[in-house]
Image (tube, rainbow, N blue to C red; front, side, top):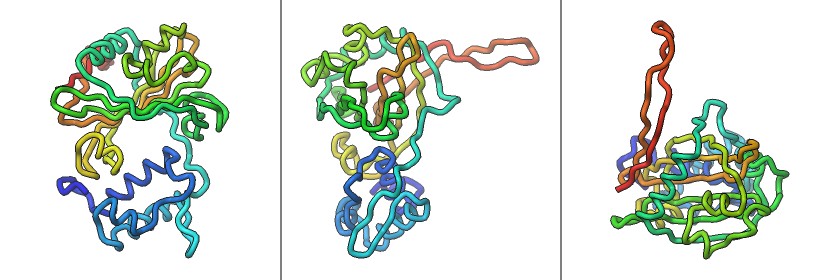
Length: 262
């Protein structure tokens, strides 16, 4: 676990497991206490405290002899009403620039049933088929980001692992006839779990920039749901702001943005 974060170890574990629960990672049950102790390198009392926090929120149920399971599906987290909405022209240009200056490793491409969270974001029925792709993008200095995307299966029928290793999904969608219209995006923070930490070359519990981006076409239909985790020491997000409005009611609005990596 990270020794630099001003958080108790049990709370770091709680945050990691809570995020994984929201992603539907434990449909068959959570790992046992011994497995969690080994994964996070902590004592049993620390793991139990984290599990108590999750149980107290109603996210898991614990039964002696039957293990620990997710409670009813965690409430889906749709993009917030106040999420940043951006035109895609600059975003597409930025993606092309990123692809030219980084390398990508495709870890997984498969057709899966949409979890409640993914289904709500893409406006699909729960369990509808979607293409799930997991990739790690790197610069010369090392791993930069761990990206998971979900695309309705009907839109992803024209590309797979080979194509995803060469081009960003947005470009592949446009080549298949999708007219990308805009995006809703949130940027927050998250702690690295064991799987992501290994791919990004970090310690479990390290702080990451977490990007959630919902792409829609010109008719407003969702075409891609993206979860991106970025090393903050190699990635930064920049925006240009301008003041507009009357002298007594000026507000800041964004004019452009760029993602810088190093």
